Image 1 (tube, one colour):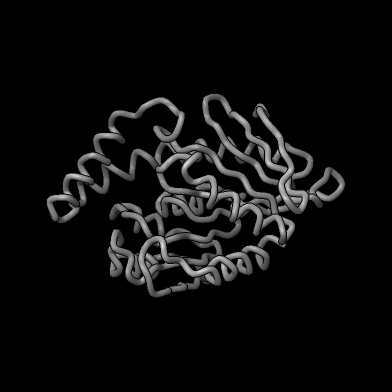
Image 2 (cartoon, rainbow, N blue to C red):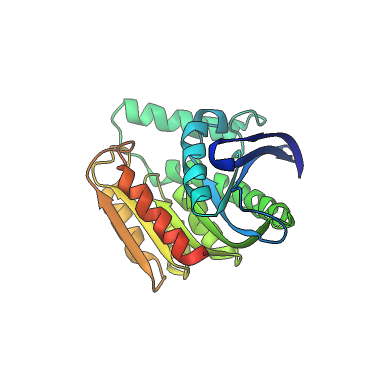
Length: 246
């Protein structure tokens, strides 16, 4: 991990951009973080729009976590932002746009092509980033995962033992194969669902929640579309992470 910039935000939050090989990322640490008092960490997931476009929302989530004494970090997803083009992913996204414009049903094959290769690439990169982040003296764990592409969160919750709690957003397509992985997830989960999300299959989201094998799981459904998440929903998620990471 190589830090490329550092600046101090309001409230003493330190924001550092880094690279991990070819992967850009950002780490936010609260003013209280130090080698003598290491803090927990939340990995901030995000959709495939690129870090620069997502930055305002990510830094808002980071500030909220820092106020609770928790560090946060994110990385650019494969084929997104300033990373090298990924032709297969671009083709899958183009096929999805065409299907939506033509008001055609989204096939299982298209969802698989869109999501499964992304999960297979992104999860090992998140794990590599976690390796590097936990080597920093001011980061001590435990670790949570929050938001982003829900299938990435499912896979990480299943294969990464250092992640002890996850907050998931039921707002993206989920391949059928991920339902089987969800049944094997056992960590505490906080799942957010926008009831009127125009791009999400509500019943599939409910079925996925039912499939999760966790003994502690809660579903928080709010009226409104994909981008209409109420402010208090973020506060509820923050409380979830405070309980499990602090």
